[in-house]
Image (cartoon, rainbow, N blue to C red; front, side, top):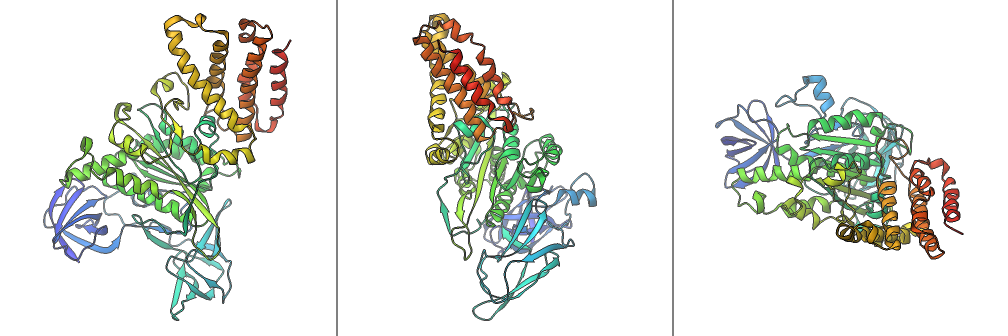
Length: 581
């Protein structure tokens, strides 16, 4: 089908003679073959958002429809790569075209020539259905890529091969119930705007351990959960996203740089290859995939990059893996929606954003979750955890993107500029943030960490809230006017803030803290507070308690290595003995 351009408005092109076109079909425009996607149809006119610079395109240029939706290619070779918003590999573009992405370039998303060592896990005559594993490819030393029966295919294995194959070569032949023979390759394609199917969605019951104490203890994120990291410019959103990507206990990381500055993605590219995965002692990039759609790239591609990332995440989820998706940031994605909506002359909503902003955000976050995956084996699960950064102008959380996000997510990690200004990182405001997964995860903490972990977590949360109340009194009457027990509360709160919540991302030991070690540090703080209050009743003066040198041991405890956790017992004994007659 061939249409003609009748209007060009930045990244939006309107073409006529498109009556046979369908919504979200991919088209190619003009002599350069620019890639675009149909986002509106009116009679025989189609509005197309173009993922490349439209400079030089004018009325009369031809538009060719591919009659296919925007899709991603799914096969071995995904991990360790960096793509743009529509899954074009930036390394191969650089090798073939230089520093800049030329218009209309045609590069295959995945390497068609590389041969992968495929090992079958089924035999001729086996019954298989959609989602069943038929073999594996060792994609790198740490990651096993499972090859699955494509959606909509089921039957009997007629042929199965093992050996070295490209992603387009046939590795199996399936005979359906009606006798049709279907060739299966390692390569699959999936439209990005359609969620991949599963049997059923499960309740989140296990935390995604991040090694960041303020998150794991106070505001835990469940595996398969949804979280937002909002904050003003300079408050450390990207640092938090990087830390979560580096240390989360998941199998695959999909990091989407959506509309952020190019130097931030450069930092990711420079840092990640040097990072060692603590669970495998291999480079972290072996389980990471990056999608870079920086602020100088075409605005329309920002909208596609979010869907590209979540579709790839679902693909790994369907293998039974736990995946964490980082989107930095959904505000830039929403700005792309606003620009395209304005060019389409749609009725604007609040602050110019389209009226469907909330539903689009909900559609994205809804694709996260713990699911029972397809396949004949029942009970196998996989998960996608979605964490989106939000960049409200001026840190105003009442703006539409922040408000719409808060109605959807269950973990809100609100960043504070004042904490960041004081060099307190992560700058997560413990009075503003919340997690709705705490009750669901309590049993996991009891079984896997300690029986009293939840008690200690509630204790420090209460102390921090009490500190905030006492600060109002201190501002009015001074610190010396509050009672001795309140002074102990203020001292405990100071220890919690400075020695537990504050964490140095550049310190080799402090950058990551296991749940066991977090529990040990909490025990020290809980023991100090309890012993201090007992000492007060035994006749200790408040000055003796507040000047106790054992506080220095507590502050250094976070720098104890994971291999030496037994040292915490001696520190706890020292606290108890120093505050006892």
